[in-house]
Length: 248
Image (tube, rainbow, N blue to C red; front, side, top):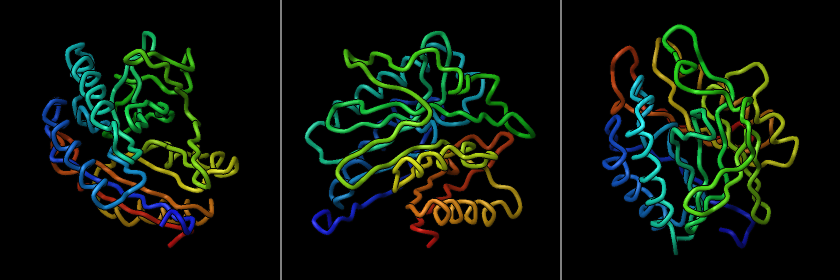
């Protein structure tokens, strides 16, 4: 498909256990292998899929964060020799603060880290209890496994005609989604790793939101949300996933 100017994108969910990065790593590897077999170019996983979104105050435990970092390093090593870019969600300490991040990896290289900007902190959400907004990043790069990795809120990733950006869950639901600026600066695909819970009529609204952002941006939009393996305490997830191109 590449010779005709197309790329194949995919979104995948996991057989996940909350606060068990070692377990989640196993299924992440399986999904990466499936994507390679199906000649996928870019694969997106849900928000915080290494840890699980519903860890709550466990996000304050150094052990969980260390295990997530170890799993991230193992994923990078596993990606060597595979012709695949993938986006994985993880909590990550940058400086002295904890951020909700999407890490882009290919062939053992950390291509960049996008940090979530708009943190929901209303009704059933409490993200500001654990995470800092990407707007408050004090640095624009960190070192992981002896690699210097750029981090930010509006990174664009380019390869030939492909140019993609990432916004994380609530970043799309905000008054001024980050993807607006991304498409104005050349992005033709937007990925959204998400953890959007289910309430009455929300799925139809969410689907229309993704559809319209794809139509307005004249771009493809790849959306994947956490699934029912998350904790059901307070929240219920369905694993909603959509891929739209120019509103279709």
